[in-house]
Each structure stands twice: as C-alpha cells, then as structure tokens.
Image (cartoon, rainbow, N blue to C red; front, side):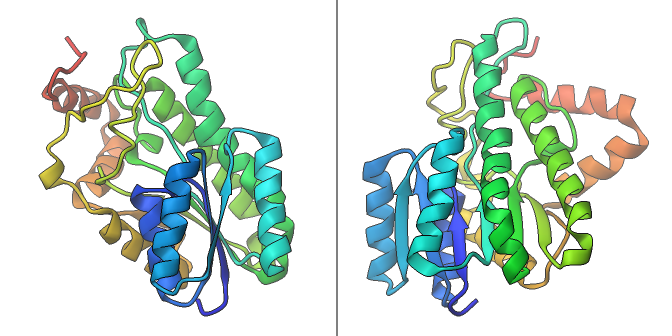
Length: 268
C-alpha cells in the first residue's frame, strides 16, 4: 500500500476512520470525506499526528456534485486513485407502516446513490491503476431485516450494483469487494433513523458483544490485499446467508424471533 491513494467516505469516525488509520499506517495516502466539518478536521489531525499523509473533504455522498468534487480533490492533490472505499451510510429502525417515506429516500440516497456517484467519478482512475472498489455493506444486503426496510433495500441495491460493475470490469483487472461486517462499534446505530426521521440515540445492542472498528478495518485491509470478492465477517453472518438460501421460510421465523428480542423492539 505504500504511496497508494485511498479514498474513504464517511471517515470521520467508526469503521471509516479505523480504515484510514490502517491503510495509512501501511504507507497509503489517505483522502477522507464526511459531512461534519469539525469531526472531519479532528480525524485529519489525528491521522497526521501518526505521520499519515491525509487530506479531508467536507461533502455529502448523496450529492452528485459533492462526489465529483471529492474525486477531483483527490486527483488534484495526489494525481491517482488506487482504492475507493464506499463506507458512508445510515441505518434505520422503524416499522414500514409507521415510517415516513422520506426516511427511506434518505437511506437510498446515502447508501445506494452515494456508492454509485463515487464509483462513477472514480472509475476512470481505477481503470488506470487497476485498483480496488470496496463497498461496506451488511448482512441486510443478503437478508431483509424487519424494521430496517429502507436499510435492507439500500444494501440489496448496493450489492446488485457492485456485482454488475464487478462483472463489467472483470477483464480490466479492477477489483470489487463487498464487505459485510457484523454489528460494529460505531455511531451508525446511534444515528439510525426512526419513523419520523430523527436519530434513535441509544443503541439497542449490547456494545460489549460486537466487533471493534479496528478489527473490521484489519479484515478489510487483508481483503483488499488479497483481492477478495466478498467478506462476511462472522460465523453468524455466514450462517444467515447460507440458511437463507436453503430455508427462506424458516429464516423468516428465525429473523423475526431474533429481532423481537431487541430492547424496545418495534416488532409485536
């Protein structure tokens, strides 16, 4: 990774920031983006304190213009792009019959279109470098999850887009990886949208029993080095994907039962 240029969206905290530290510690030049200027500036400062070459760009991945400007900033500063990591994302927790449709649109704009825009503008440069595209997804992209209709829809869409793109560039040596962490220590659940579009605040999960962002970053880094196609990072995730293919009706019941046990679950 020495002197490779890595763009990471949604990188002011959580998995995105952990990825910036990991790739940067291996010699890569880092471009981080996010919407919160204060958090992003702090992240850039922390990276530079570790002698990592890093620049930041304040913008919204859901904006086509911002995505174009992000790629242009990377090219202007470093002249190349070797790895694009589409990490920016938002989640939700609300029953479909109660949720505002604008919440679903917001999830699609960020999780799906944010990936599409970044890939569209970065692809010409990745074709030159024979680089990597990484989509940070979820088991929700393999199996629809209750009270996460918009989130699952956006991740299914991401999977379909990246699979199609992977096939298109198959003979051009561009690597496309879909990485699916388990529940990870980050702000995405605290910032998950509820029915009216506000943030849920407290996560319903037991934070001590989930993966660290650093562990996820390490796995993804190795996946990029080895040009892996897919990464499902836990046994539970792998079993969910496997069983859902074989016994979908059974998994409907099991998934309902699992999420009904969540703290303050909206499932009845």
